[in-house]
Amino acid sequence: MADAPRTPGTVAVPGAVLAFDVIGDLADATPDAPPLVLAGSPMDSTGFGSLAAALQASGSDRVLVLTDPRNTGRSTRDDDTAAVTPEQHAEDLHALVEALGVGPVDVFASSGAAVNFLHLVAMHPGDVRILVAHEPPMTALLPDAAAIARVCADMVATYDAAGQGPAMARFIGLVMHRGEVTGEEPVPDPAMFGLPSEDDGSRNDPLMANMRGEGVTRVPDLDAVRAAGTRVVVGVGEESGGPTDGEIAGRSAYAVARALGQEPVVFPGGHNGFLGGEFGQTGKPEEFAARLREVLG
Image (cartoon, rainbow, N blue to C red; front, side, top):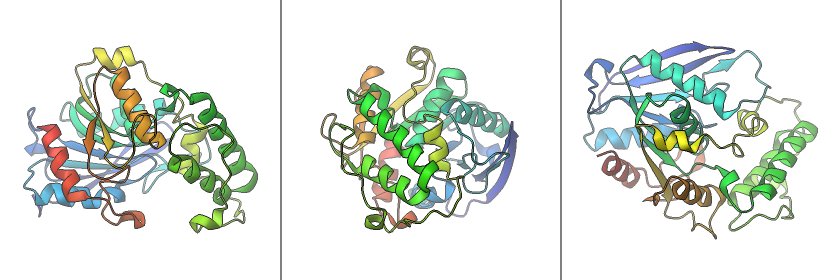
């Protein structure tokens, strides 16, 4: 499917217009091989170029769907400064599945999108056949949840007061931290990560919109997730650390898997294991694609 056509599309939802691409022909999808949605949040569809190419190069005949969450990439929304909750993202994803019109889909969702799709499974259990939830940062399930919530609240307050650079430095320091968070960790200098320290006045950063919407501190109805017909597979990066000494997203993956009565499936690389140079980050996209195909099979 290396030469499959790529067709852009949009779907209107309350307060936003979502952009997506279909690689292949939806008419070729079958109940046993439905479209495979590749989703991130707040990352847009450009982050899945290497993974999509690796899946195609490996001989996969899957129709792929790449989506931009609201206020990210080509998607737009009426108020680009407002909070976006996981439930809102889930309703957006429900609208996307309905717009595709080919029944339940399979999904590889990373990071915030893994949280959003778990909410979707709880809210609309008929939308997804298989969900591979890669490192969902569902921090409310962690023993240090209260400290993480305080850091996240401080991050949003920093963003409102000083702009993106200082807030993103706080975010990077949080996600790179290994082991339990106390809330007393030193606040990094934005210059350490090449971030601006001056405030440009904008307040429409999609990551901060998700943080404002409690995207890492809300938990879906896990009983509903367990009761759904969806096969949920929780993934964790081999380089992300363990359930107690790892990074926040990795530790959360173990916690989500435990809450769902399973062990996480280990994927190559770390949180960015599927990237092949996108955003200046390089994981192991070919090995990652092979592992994903095994899991979906």
